[in-house]
Image (cartoon, rainbow, N blue to C red; front, side, top):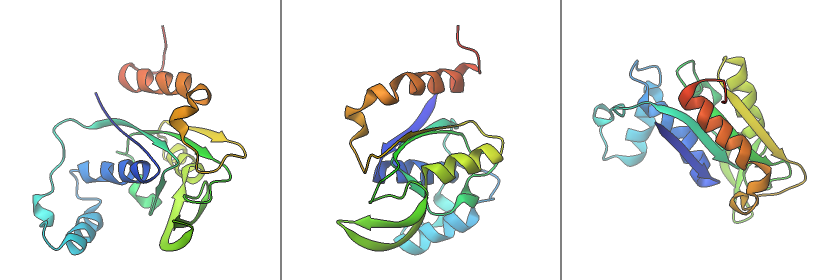
Length: 160
């Protein structure tokens, strides 16, 4: 039972790492991009993990291309401040140290909406009025729902 999780850049990494497990080659453009960026990792050396990821927990994360969220993508659990000025809640540019980066991204609102349209489990907790906060100090707004998401991702939709 493997889950990918992270906050901010870690959430972005978790949301992008999962397509690497696709064994059907549908995300081959991602392999090429990684190879071009690194210049050292041959795309042919990237292999799917032995156990598929059951779900992703993203806190203020985003994805660069929603087409990476396909039918084999795991369920997503997202917590995001609606007034985040670093990683967009909906869509926009990522800011690094207050400077707009060249990275266009789709935030939690779009990720969960797209996942739901694909028939995937998706759960969005908007933190209304919050910015790019430390969500680990705000567990009261998401902890119980996260436990339910984890449980259902492992066992199925019914809690005891």
